[in-house]
Each structure stands twice: as C-alpha cells, then as structure tokens.
Amino acid sequence: MIPHSVSFVGLVCTILVLTAGLFAPASAAETAAATRDRAGLVPNAGASGAAAQPPLAVVLKFDDLREVDGVMPTGWERLAHYLRRTGIKGAIGIVADSLLQPTPAYLHWIKAQHAAGLIEFWFHGWDHLSYTSDGMRYNEFVRPYRDQASRVARSQHLARQKLGFDFSTFGPPGGPGKGSFNADTLRLMVRDPDLRVMLYPTRLDAAGRAAVATAAGKLTILERVHGVDLESPIGVPNFDNVRRGIEQHPERGYFILQGHPARWDTTQFSEFERIVDYLIARRAVFMTPTELAAALRRLHVPRTAISDAAAPD
Ligand SMILES: [Zn+2]
Image (cartoon, rainbow, N blue to C red; front, side, top):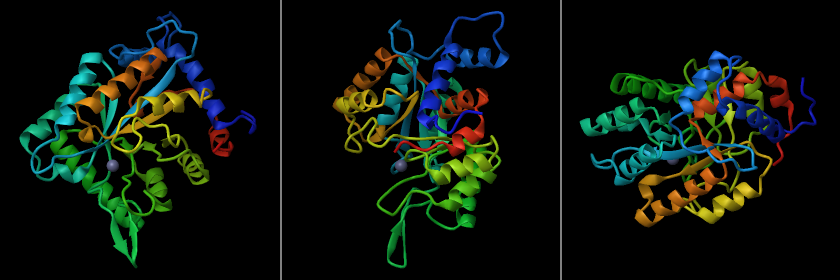
C-alpha cells in the first residue's frame, strides 16, 4: 500500500512515468494489454521527440456537440479534419437530445468519426439546460437521483438506437446555475453499469474519492486543474494560458484540457493549433478519457491510496 503522504498528483505522476512504458518499443515480455494499448496509440501524434521531459498524457475535451436549427456548427468539421490530418485523439461531448430528431448528415458524421477511432464521444447531458427551483437556478445534473437516472437512460437508449454505441464517459454540463452535479450524480456513477469514467469539473475532492472507493474499480474520475484549459476566457483558445498552466504543475502526469470548438473562428482555431504544437513539443500523448482511465486502472494502484490521499488544492 502506498503511504498516505504520497499525494494524488505525485501518484499520478508516478503512474504516467510507468505508463511511458506503454509507448516503448515492443519486447517479448510485453503484456497483451500493453500491446492493445500501443496499437490504439500508434496513429496518435505526439510523444515522438527525445526531449528530457517525461511524457504527459493529455485529453482534449471538447464540449457541447449538437446541431443548431438542423445544422452542425462548422467548427466541428474543422476540428475533426484537423484531428484526422494530425492523427491526434480527442473527446467530444454530445448533448444527447440532439439525437432525438437529428439530420442524417449529423448521425453519419458522428458514426464516421467514431469508426475512425480518434474521437471518443461522451455523454454531456440530456439537454444541457439549467432550471429554476424555489428561486434558485441550477444546472442540469443538480436534481434528484431518479431524474438524473432517467436522463442517463434516455440518452443511452438514443445513442444505442441512433449511433450504434453507448457512452462510457460522462462530463456534467455546467451553465449559469449552481454547481454541475451533486451527491446523487456520484451515486449514479457508482451504480450505472455503462458509465465508467467521469470528467470531473475540478480537482478530485472528498466526495469524488469516496465514490471511486465505493465503486471498487468500476469508476475512474479524471480531474481537471482550475485555470488550465484550452480556453481563457471560456470560448477563446489561449496558448499562453495553457503553457503557463502546464508549467506551473510540473508534477502532474495528465491534464484534461477543455474547449468549445463550435465557438471558434479561424483565428481562434489557429491558436488551438499553436497549443497542440506546444503540447507535442512537450511530449504529450493524446488519449481518450477511456484510454487514460484504463491506463490508470491497469497499474493496479491500491484504491485506498487514491481515496485517502489529500488533494493538493
Ligand atoms: Zn457544456
């Protein structure tokens, strides 16, 4: 067992140094899991340099995929084209009610990206709408357990029916209301048989650590570091912000970097490309949430070490 004095970030750093072996040349002793992992990462750009810095796992988390008045915003196609051209992996959050009456082109586009294997589509709420109760405004997943569960079930049903796959990863939608999830969300993440990864909006906290411990290996929470995102302010890619944020946390083994590509114009998209160039130079390995969670789980980290460790901030 790892002593409690080992912080979670230190632990993750160790994990990622260990996972660096996943990207090393094949050896006779290689495990089947490592072979599968590397096979999944072969078309992925990054981690190609011989720089002195250790590899850094990065999940590019793109939010809010949906059609607007029957048209998918052009930013999504620009993003998918860029990911294909560069061979970089990413993760796109679908607002699930966009699958209720989708255009054939929208469904075709999602299925084609899914089949190409570079993008993981994750569940970003049923309608991403906030609501008012007793004079207070709340975001979508701040509501009772049964209401959350029915939104998840409806969304998974539609995904299976319209896309032919379901979601493994959940990232709660934010908005103008209070919070983006509650204790019932964590209970649901522990119990739901299909959702195995949660994109946390913050650093892991006591409630998240307790949920991970209760789930006994079923649930992995990927935390986000405040202020280290693709965008600053929200909607505006910001190279300086990403570089500063990553350099301020040299101890971290992974970052979940959030952005909203539907909002980016061509100049802002160029800023995003500048960020990716920097990440590649920084030896980033771009992973989907499911891949990163699997890499973390496979290393047999004692869950108590994660659940008991103090979050640094
Ligand atoms: Zn969102």
